[in-house]
Length: 162
Image 1 (cartoon, rainbow, N blue to C red):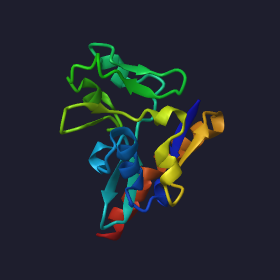
Image 2: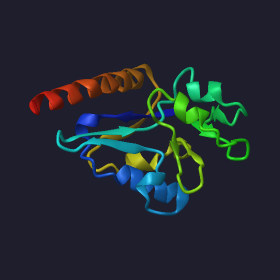
Image 3: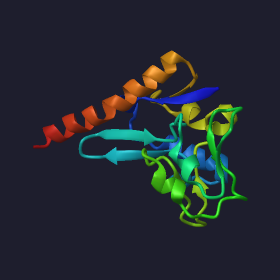
Image 4: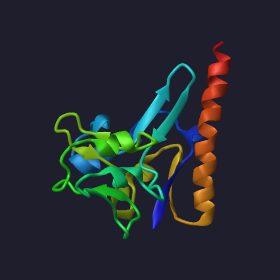
């Protein structure tokens, strides 16, 4: 199984990940329909790609009243069965990372499915801010280290503006 490792310090904010994700999944270049979103602090030049972290005990799965959110054990991705999903958005509100999104055109839940193990976002990221690695202790530690750096980056940037 694989996971995405995101290094916010390398992200340029180009949004290629969002655009190509929507193209792959929905056939249109519409960043709002991506399963990954770049959170931006423009003035501070901080860009953080956010996507499903495939939690060990996923809140999105636990709160789903219809069992529509589930782990794909072949890829490790948390997925949503569109036939079982009733659009209650419980999974969206339960995600502690804000990594479950909604297509505002149709109310459909958008969640990173790792592109069946070959993530498009990692292939198109021009700075290497998004990489796909086999799940290992080392990959898990990188994931945690990179997540821990995000608040530090924001705090440093906000401190520059005061």
